[in-house]
Structure formats: structure tokens, C-alpha cells
Length: 203
Length: 260
Image (cartoon, each protein chain N blue to C red):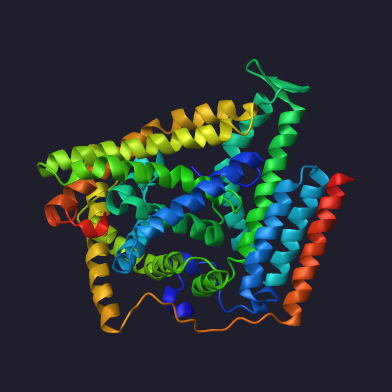
């Protein structure tokens, strides 16, 4: 999902940087002092979860779980995912520096959207219905991320249109996997710690 | 403060970066961050292959100055290349221009090939210089330097928390995986695998939240008020200024080479 330096046109890079600064600012405003440890801890867990390789047929995919991050953190998912991307670029050489803004928007905006739209449904009803909504949130976030990556590429030049289409099609199985895993994660969280999604402390 | 990241065999410390004494490591972290951004901005502005190759050479020289482990750093860079290879592979076929060869009815063009090489050179030059200039710091120093560069305090807190707990949570993940393994879990493409991995992620998150509640309690008990107390003062030495001026001159040189 990471776009590298040099691939995008300047307007896309600058637009992404501005949008990510806005998103981070809004996210930080939603994050008061008492929630910093929770947000940091979740940010670290999503970093670790993204190292899990899930088998799919002969190959495997690694998780992104931005939908789940949005469901748990709301707006605070924006700075949390940004920090993850920054660390990945600096210490692991994944992604790039000038495209950090674009990558952050592509991954964090769908997360926040999933959080805003679907989070209210997660705590309602039975654990299973919460899990199904969680799965929908997980799929929605990945679908939107893939779509936004495709748009970023396509708006940087027509030459990228085939690559953009391919990115989208190649990620359909990933959407299914993310939906299933997010759903089961929500199911477990609802059963083990029922008050988790009721806590306003995390919204 | 390398102990904050714990054991040498874990992810963030894998390169064994910290505590090495290259030239880069002795320079002011704030200046290194600013110069990494400046160099990246210069490189993405370049378009001629000569200038881009030269910029990659500059990154390699920086790598030599830093005394980072060559193999590991270059391997990481190569990993990123594996990541983008697919997109780059498509470019010769999607950019119209003079034909090189035809594959299953699709014509590959020279223009597309140059574009792909251009992107590959840019991406590698930027990421290598970033890993060398910024990735060679301890993560905690990175946090402090970012704060000194006027990053929002909360963002720096978030960064430092993430850095602090990545290894802790990774160990917890490995423990859970070991527990699954002794119970005969083998991942495959089936419902059972997806459910087990989902529960694994869910469990990690529940534990992380419970841990964060304990951490917050412990921090409050010690009077946490949201301020970051800096353990080190950064000072710009003449060497920093010489290095910054040198890299700026090289960057300008690259721009001139690009125009020529």
C-alpha cells in the first residue's frame, strides 16, 4: 500500500502533506492527556499486527488493520497511523519521506471514516452483530484505502492507470481477509472486555 | 537509551544501529532531520538520470560515512524495491513511446523504461539517505529532536509510546503465537486460521488497553502532566554547520547537474 518517493506528481504530494497535517491536528485535538498511553499502546499494537502474515492460497498477505484502528481510536487513529508510517520509513525503509503525507491520508482517512460511521454500531446489539459491523468496517477501510492509492497514482499521470487498476483488483482478497480478521477481533473484544466499545474514553 | 528498545534480536534494533561511532552519529540530530528533508526535496525535483544516479551515489557516500552495517541497510532498501517492482514493471507497457519489444501484444517503450528507472533511483536515493541520516538515531533521540523542531508535544508523546511498546507487544505476540503452536496451530487458507488470527489480534488489543491503563496509573502516580523532560540539550557545533553546508552545496550541485 505504500507509495514511494518519486512516483507521484508534485500537486499530489503537496496536497497529501497539507491534508495529513490537518488530519493530525484534528486527531491530536481529540487526544487528551489521559488517552495518550492508550493511543500509543494501540499504535504499537497495530505496528506489530501489521507484521503478521496471513496465508491466502499459495501466498500470504500482511495485515494493515486500519479499519480496526479507526474503530478503536476514532480521530486519534490519524496521528497513531502516521507515527507507524514514520517509524516504518525511518527505521525499516518502507515507503518514503516526501510521500509520507499522501500515505498517511490514504491509510488514516479511511480508518477515521470507518470509526465515525461504524463505531456506534459496534457496541450495540449482540456480540455477533457487533462483529459483523466490525467486519464491514474492516472491509470498507481497506477498500477505500486501495481506492485512494489508485486515485493518487492515477492523478499523477495516465501512465499509472493500469497499475492503479491492478492495485485495486489485487487487493480484493486482502479486503476479505481484513474483514474476517477485524470481525473476529471485535467478537473477541466484545466477549472478553464488553465495556471496551462503550468507553467514551476511546472515542 | 538503547535499553528502551530492549533486546538486540528484536525488530527496531535489528540493524544494531545504535551506539555506533560514525561521523553521522556525532552530528546534531535536529540538523540531520532537516537535512534529510532538504535532500529528499532536492532529489524528487531531479529528472535527469545522470543527476539521479549522482544523488544515489551521494546517499551511498553518506552510508559509508555513517558506518551503518552495509549489508543490512542495503537489504532493507532492496526489500522496498521488491515492493515496488511490480508497479515499475508495468510502466514500460503503459507509457506510449518508441517501442523496445512486444510482449503478448503489448509494446514496451523506452520512455516508460526510463520513467521506471527514474522512480527507482529517486525512491532508493531518498530512502537510503533517510535511513542513514535519521534512522541511525535512537528512536528516543528522534522524539526529542522532533520536539525541538517544534513538532506538537502530543505527537511526540505518541511516537515515544509507540517506540517504547513495539518491542513489548511484539514479545507478547510471539508468546501468543508460541502458545498457539504448542496447541498444534498451523496457519493455512481456512476459516479456522482466520478466526484464530482474528482472536489473536483481538487479544493483543485487549491486553494492550489493559496495559495502558496500568501505565497511565503509574505515570499519574509520578505526577505526569503531559510535559516531556528533555534528557539532552542539542547544540549546533561547527562540524554540524560544515556538514549542513556541504550537503546543501552537494544538493545545489545536483540541481545544476540536472539543468545542464
